[in-house]
Image 1 (cartoon, rainbow, N blue to C red):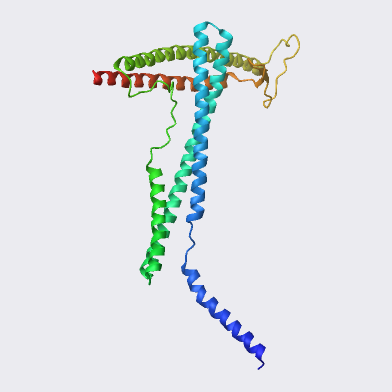
Image 2 (cartoon, rainbow, N blue to C red):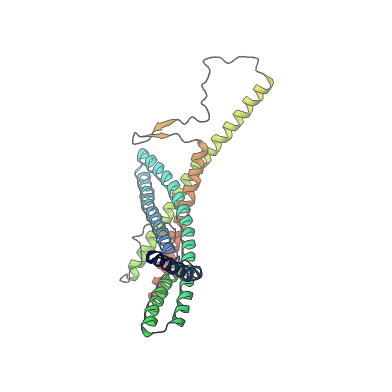
Length: 306
């Protein structure tokens, strides 16, 4: 046998032995998912925070629109009042949408956290086995350092889980807050201001209720008229309609009209307007509840201070 052939067979034998030796090790080593799951967790956390930040921006705009509506009502400025109400209704829908998004992304974030903690548990279990097999102080120290880092990652993820959840709650007039420097007189003034805001909320709710009743009455009249038309069409109409025929739009047609700023907006149906007003009513009612609750807190502090 020639020299080159011998060397080629020896090399092939060494490769085969290396593959055989490596195969059981690869089979026994489960894939470490910590990196991938940490990246997924970071992305979910970032998306959740971004959605919450967007909710906060719209919350501020909603507060401003409600305050502008109240000021316009007190000033008797009907045009400004209608414009502020339109903005409040639009922002109420957006707040509701963003609240659902924050809640949905919060669930995604928790799922990503659970997956990350499971991967960290698996890594710690494997590292424990490696510590038991460590033969030199250097090997033991190297694995122990990785164990400490993994435990730190695990503790951080657990701490973020135990942190109070992001609370999706409108904070009306956030400037009216407790300050350690407040005197009993200052606390009493803040409580009185909040109770005044609650009374203004009652006025807003009464106005919204009047609009709801007007639209409900309009819808009832419309349904009654439609019932009469349907009855006439069922039994036949002896007299043909006089005048030009009415043009009925197709179900997919959406008419648009300019708003107070001159921008064309899709025309809202009475049913949609009614739904928007009911949502706004719930939000203003929540504002009143919060005003009274915070006023009670300030009054309790006054009694405690004496």
